[in-house]
Amino acid sequence: MTSQAQAAEPLSKVAGLAFFGFPLHAAKEPSNARAAHLSQIEIPMLFLQGTHDALADLTLLRPIVQSLGPKATLVQIEGGDHSFHVPVRSGKTDADTMSQLVDAAAPWFKSITR
Image 1 (cartoon, rainbow, N blue to C red):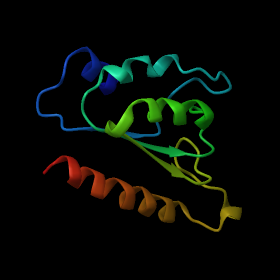
Image 2 (image 1 turned 135 degrees about the horizontal axis):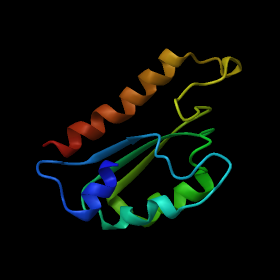
Image 3 (image 1 turned 90 degrees about the vertical axis):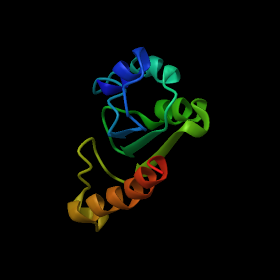
Image 4 (image 1 turned 180 degrees about the horizontal axis):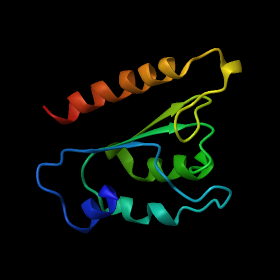
């Protein structure tokens, strides 16, 4: 995982890390052990996370991101699973969700490349 490599030794010319569904833990096995290395990363991080992602319990991920301070941003995709698929009953399509991801990520990418 790129974040582990970045934590071990900063990667040349990497301005930030964007996580499209950070795999915090195995499904149905909540844990925050996979996030231990994140505090060693000094560049900006963007966490794009579905609120129904079986691989990242938000009650665990939110405090982790908060503890990283201003270098970390969490964007929650309402109803999205690990692949950002949303239920039909949400009234949104997968294309709507992809647009939401782009709308969240594009300004962040621009902000770290200035």
